[in-house]
Each structure stands twice: as C-alpha cells, then as structure tokens.
Image (tube, rainbow, N blue to C red; front, side):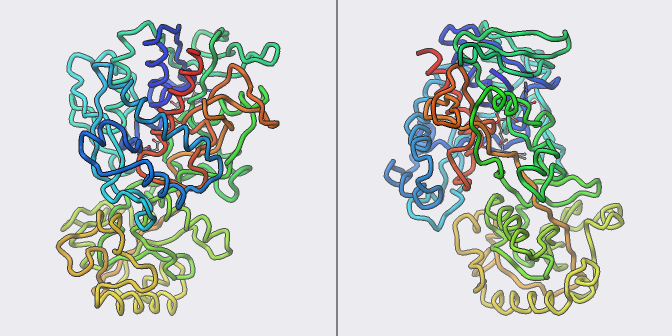
Length: 504
Ligand SMILES: Cc1cc2nc3c(=O)[nH]c(=O)nc-3n(C[C@H](O)[C@H](O)[C@H](O)COP(=O)(O)OP(=O)(O)OC[C@H]3O[C@@H](n4cnc5c(N)ncnc54)[C@H](O)[C@@H]3O)c2cc1C
C-alpha cells in the first residue's frame, strides 16, 4: 500500500486480515495524509450505520440522485462503488476497533431528485486514545483551528483522525508492516506486470516485491505547484488545504509504468478564506448566515453563497475562466452580522486582530462605497449589488440565486431568523470584507481504473498488478462532489475492491 490515508490503511487492514503479507509505505514522517485534516465523513449510501439510524433511502433514489448530479460518464465505477460500499463497511465493522455511525449532513445537491436532505454520510466513532499513545504517536495532527481544523480534547480523537487512529490500532494487531519516511519512486514492471516498488527512505534505497499487487492510495498532487500550473492553470498550489506529501509522485510512477490518467484538471474545490500568511482556511460556514454576501472582482454576486464548498469553489474557478476576475472574491458583511456571528479572528463581541487588517485580507470601511474602493471593485457595482440583495432580503428572499431555499442552505443558516434563516440585509456599518480565493481539499484526477480498482492503460487494457484508490485515482464522481464524504468514501471502497481483486 502506498500512502497512509484512510484508503491505504483500510486496504492494508483488509489485506492483512485476509492473510496477505502487507506493507504500508508513507513518504512523510507522519501517517494519515489529508485524511487527518478531514471531518472523517464517508458518503456510503445504504450502509449499515445509515440503516441503524433508519435513514429512509433506496438504491433507486441514490441512482436517481447520481444520474442528476454525477451523470453517466464512467457509470461502471459508480455502480461498483454503490454495490460494494455497504459490504465494505460491514467488513470493516467486523474488526472490534472499527465502528461507524450516521450523522446528519445534507447531500450537496438538495434540489436534485433522489437527494437525501438528512444526508448519507457515516463517521467512525470518536476514539479514546488512552493506552494507545504509542500506536498513534506518528498520526498527523489536525489543521490549526484558524485554518478550519480543531483543538483536539485529548485523549478523545475526533474527525478523520478518529478513523485513522482506529485503523492504526487495528493494524497493530496484525502482521502488517508500516514504514514512514519511505517514498515510492518508481514501479518495477516485468513482462507487462507491476511486481514491486522502488523506494527511497531514511535507510536509503530499497525495493519491495509485491506478488499480489501495488495499491496507490497516495493522495493527489495538490501540493505540486508546477504540475498544477501545468494541469490546472491558472491555479497553483498556494491555497490548497491538502497535507504535505501531496506532490503526486505515486501518480508519476504510475504514468511511467504505462497507466492512463484522467480528470487531472479537477479538485475537490472550496472557497478559501485567506489568512495573513497567505494560506487559506476551510472555515466558511459563516456564509450561510444573514447580513452577508460574496462578490467577485466586478463587485457582483455570482452564486448562492451557502452552496456546498465544492459548488461555490467551482463557481469561482469557472467564473474566473469566463473572463471576470474571481481571484480574489470577497465575503462582505455588515456590523450586525459581525457582532452576531463573528468575523475572521473575531468571535462575537470581540475585535478583529489588527494583524489581519494590516495584511489586507480583512478590510473595514464605514460605507459600502468606501469598502468597494478598499477592495478594488467598482463602487457603483457593489452599491447596486447590496441594494438588490437588501430589496429581496426585506422579504427574506434571494430572487437571483434562491439562497435559503435548499435544505443544505438552511443547515448552516440562523434558525432564529424568520422567514429565511440564510437571508438578511446589510444595513449597518462598519462594513467588512474578507478575501476569498479558490482553495481545494485535494486534487481528484489520477490513474484511470476499472471497477476492481485495477489501473488501466491508455488502450483500456488492464495494467496487471497496479491498483489505485482515493485521490490517486480518477474519481468516479467526475466533475461533481455529490455528498459529504465522497473523497474518503472513494478511497476506502476502491482500496477494498483492489484488495478483493488481489486476494482473487
Ligand atoms: C479540512 C478538510 C476537511 C475534509 N473533510 C472531509 C470529509 O469529512 N470527508 C471526506 O470524504 N473528505 C474530506 N476532505 C477531503 C479528504 O480529506 C481528502 O480528499 C482525502 O483524505 C484524501 O485521501 P487519500 O487517501 O487519497 O490521500 P491522503 O489522506 O492525503 O493520504 C495520502 C498519503 O500518501 C502519502 N504519499 C504521497 N506520495 C507518496 C509516495 N510516493 N510514497 C509514499 N507515500 C506517499 C502522503 O504523504 C499522504 O500521507 C477534507 C479535507 C480537508 C482539507
């Protein structure tokens, strides 16, 4: 297994449990990858935790939903994912350390037929790490809170780290070998079959023979600025939320071994609120609250601000490509919003740190006109945008984008605000703006695979011995992020499919 996110570790656990000699290699000095930064959701419709929670759902509804938002491209991958998902969770839950539960988080296209407004995502239970400190000592820490992470109340491990901690503890009871600071450099190909890996690490160069196969579950190339400029111009790696290690070296090894690739222009997008140090934050659930809008470089709203992060991030990327500047956009709020919900570093009732204002990522002005001048958008356009928003907001409506009409919108609204928990006017200064750039949770293009997770060559034939999962694989979700937990769900399910194929 190459990598140590949820896909690689779940694959390793299933392989080791089935009696396969299993080696996990991780290039950094910490296990977990971007999965460790994540909320740890897995979008696995109809799995046992959903059924235990009596989520009303059917395969027909799931298919109807995915027909509407993902489409038919690579349908065989989607079918494989849905067919296998519940069984994979059953198999993992056979291990005493692994237990999942459903938690509410609406699907990302609540307006689509078949959408589940309570959600279809499951999570590993929080984990009490008492007594397991050594086993999880090298587990990557969460992002810092200002970037959308959290302060963990040790010994309770939460989010994606809970899933990873559980997998590491379960793996510690198997014969699997976990090697950190060991990087896949290239694949060994003999007679057209991948039979092993050449690695570098603290101990120098080594080769690992892999009689059953090599699974690449090594994340994407979100941190590789050069490659992103090549495959995703004009965007580079500046605003990614992905963990160190996401340089795409496993993908390159697969390409050199003859694997086909796809979706390289794609990411799991997110609007990134900018920090003074130039990095982005995933925190943007404030945007569902009244008294705020987002505008592009023309001073115009361009989407429903409460849209799920991938939809809004994608609207920024596509809007920019259309010729109107969306890099940066601005999250604009009035004094009532700031006092009620907080803003940037300010929790309600506290001041924004001066450092943030000095850096220019947060801007304050007494009037909307003055704010426009400070953020470099046309003043007449911003004044007109706010006026139009306020006219609709007086009746709790957003005639332009329908904000607050979807269950997802309302999930992040303010339930105390009537009649629309997501809509309220911007009327009282000072006005504030916060710079937003297109960020990402990782790239989602990579090795083209079949429905067993087997890598394919450009002519569509199988490249024997090579498998991919998670963000190293060209995602079955194509250009869509259907629900919370699609990335990690894909990593775990396709890793399991790969292991099933290796077992034979
Ligand atoms: C704040 C945040 C919240 C998120 N929340 C969710 C969520 O709740 N649900 C969800 O589904 N997704 C979520 N995501 C996205 C998700 O975390 C990632 O898309 C997913 O974890 C990627 O998993 P992976 O297994 O492909 O890669 P990773 O988890 O990144 O693991 C890849 C590992 O491979 C290692 N590696 C890379 N190259 C090599 C090499 N050549 N040799 C050896 N090792 C290598 C890397 O160092 C890394 O440790 C979130 C992301 C962020 C940033």
